[in-house]
Length: 397
Image (tube, rainbow, N blue to C red; front, top):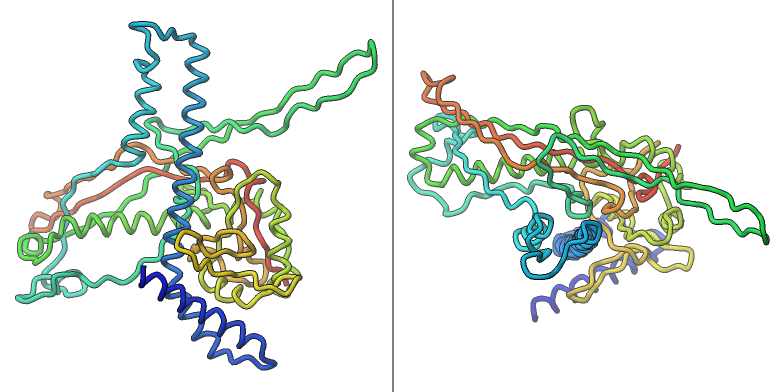
């Protein structure tokens, strides 16, 4: 508790110092950068909170939809609830129970992998006589699209997502007048997973002599590599044998909101961007950390800073009153760039994972070198299914 109070105090003091610096007629950029560094140091905890809250919220929405679908299925089938006819015997109900108890994607693949002992950059450092008990690892920046989007796990080749485009038009009619006919329109979005692969070679010497559990280490690295690649492509992918990112989606780009600055944007632009999204969606901003540092200096029309620290253990920092997620693969502001996204990604973007991970062990191809290769594969993709649920801010020339 004391640590939390200290953190809140430090963030509050840094925020106050940033405001004071910005009020000067000639603010010191070096001081602003230093203060942003302090605020950035605490941003990871804020993002953990945002991710946790969004994941919990999405799980609740997902569970509610699953229950409603199950109830509808039971109603259509007219299942009796008497002895021997309990709806709990239905496969749909059992599947729902498995979802609630175990969650999606709880598959633990088994694998073995390898590195070299004669080349330090490929693993030789790991077989020294004395070693620290932990491997020091550089930070891998992973865009958290998966934590805010809808995630589906399938066992077939593709997933069909039905989308309602237009709704019925109801009209008032005069006495004895003939009523007008109308119909809603629908379309299907087909989502086909693609293969994501990494092959890791390792020598028998490294496997036997390393001071660490190399099987576990390489598995973790493969998982990180998968997450980093898919996170980038969920944002920027072109859809050619890979995910179609929401920033790259031509339909989303076509309805982007143009900023008022030259290759930049103002605080008012960020406020106006929220007005582009229909009421009823549950939106969140998405941007990279460099844009966040810039936004901390912006004010809205009323003179208040758009970025506000939460300073309360269960309340995340907000931007213009909305939560935000830091995604390092979001573009920087530049001419004709899309540095800010604002939308309900759970409704607008769907990620599809195909059940299972494939691990292929190859002891033959490089047997003369005493090298074993492990190829790890999994299938997945992502694409926009509801373009109107995601709005982009475009910085124009």
